[in-house]
Amino acid sequence: MRKLLLAPSILSADFSRLGDEIRTVDQAGADWIHIDVMDGAFVSNLSYGAPVMKCVRGCTQLPFDVHLMIEHPDRLIPDFAAAGADTIVVHTEACTHLHRTIQLIHSLGKKAGAALNPATPLDVLDYVLEDLDLVTIMSVNPGFGGQAFIPSALRKVRRLRDMADRRGLDLDIEVDGGVDTGNLADLIEAGANVFVSGSKIFHGDAPANVRAFKAIMNAAESR
Image (tube, rainbow, N blue to C red; front, side, top):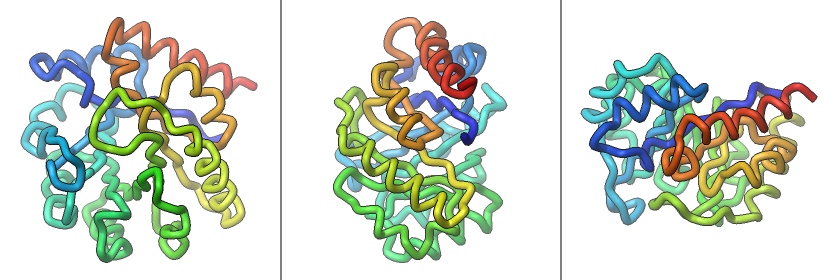
């Protein structure tokens, strides 16, 4: 089993105290910080850009997992790389030349990921899977936090893990959208190992919420 990683999404954090929110989940045991970047075009919402990310980069040593929900991502990838991203994830639906975009991310010394919307088939990754470090399975339609988990994402995760295993790939499979302590064990069993959660972490007692996620993950790893 690959290491299980919790990546709280700061989209659901209190933006007026963003640095403190990041430090809180870091100290509670989070593994990555997930940063959702939205442009109001690819998705119908706006979030923040590279300058904001650069401002909070000094708040934690945890890896920054940057999810670009934007059109023409190649234009901004260098900015996010320079601002401190560790992994940069682009949407297959937004990339005209996905292989070239993956190469660009790697040329900047960053891990490269590809995200798939719920209706996008895994077949689009057939010729680039070996080039990826991570694949993000969207289990909601992207753009807004707090949505309900789409159950068909479990089948997609299972099929993707099987594809990666048959090819002998060391691939992180991330699930983003509606992930909570009720479906976490099923996602682990299906083969996912990186879990993004926003409202289920930051709404309420964030340290206790992180510990609840990590308890399930630690139990799975110990079996």
